[in-house]
Length: 112
Image 1: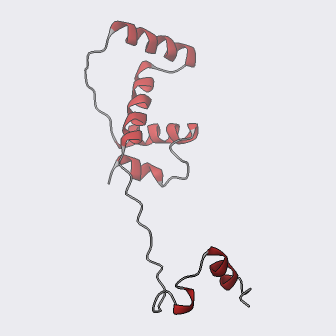
Image 2: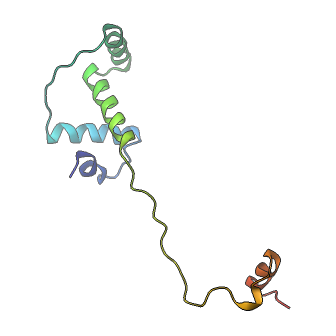
Image 3: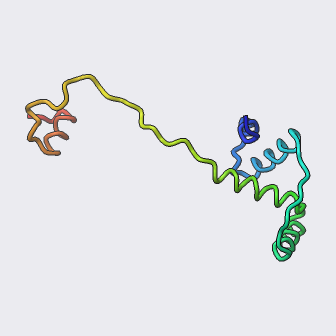
């Protein structure tokens, strides 16, 4: 089970600020890993300035950005229309040459 599914059942949508905080808390309680990666100096400075202005850490900004990136790219299951067919033999003979007004009138019981 993914971390997103474990944390998703806790009542707040991940798209809300409270959901992001909750997800970050879940990530920390389940585990974390130290890693190193190269990032351009201008981008790092911008992230550091943003973190300082927001009263948070560079790590938190990067973590939030990665979570959002992964979440937005998850492939949603394709929509499958439920089969709500009804029994019968299809179009009745009296409506074979009918137009929309005749169908509408019959559906609303206005048939003469």
